[in-house]
Every structure is written in C-alpha cells, then in structure tokens.
Image (cartoon, rainbow, N blue to C red; front, side, top):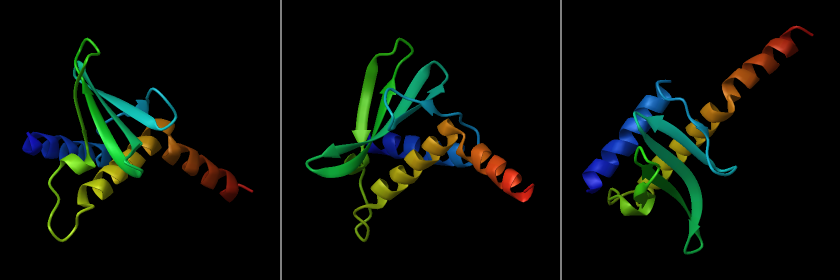
Length: 116
C-alpha cells in the first residue's frame, strides 16, 4: 500500500510543479483540493500528537472518503526521518500558491511597481 501512496505523492508533486494540476480552495482556509478524473485529492496540514503533519485524503466520484494517509505513514529514508513531511509540505505550499493564484498576484504587483 505504501508504494501506491508514495507514487500518488510523487505524481502530485511532479504534476503540480509542472503546472498540470489546478488546485482549488478546500473545505477550510488551510485545505486545498484537486479533481483527478472523477476523484478528488485533498491536502491539509493538521496536528497529530502535538506535531504538524501533512494529510492527504482521497475521495471517490460520489464524494466518499476512501483513503487517508499522512507523511508519517510513508517509509522515510534512514538518514532523513522527515523526508515525506518535507516533500508533502512543499506540495501543500505549491497547492496553496496554485489555488490562490499567488504567481499571478506577484506578477501583477511587480508590473505595477515597475510602472511607477
């Protein structure tokens, strides 16, 4: 099972960084979602046992939650126990920027400042 989860995270990172996914605001301010076919992926940062963790939830076409996992569920390399937290946090930040249109806002601000 963890191999499939790793593949999902890796592909989400790759496709998000490549501009192939359009993330949207999720259920609250710190949750973001993307539709993949008839299914939906939701990513959020949550507290677990007092520490931050990145959670991914997978929903089917009917909106039913079918899978949930976080960075601690994925096997990390021996020399970097926080590997998946870092990778998934980076994905969350990219999803946030994508959903909020941050790059467009930044470009508009730069253009505005250059025009002054």
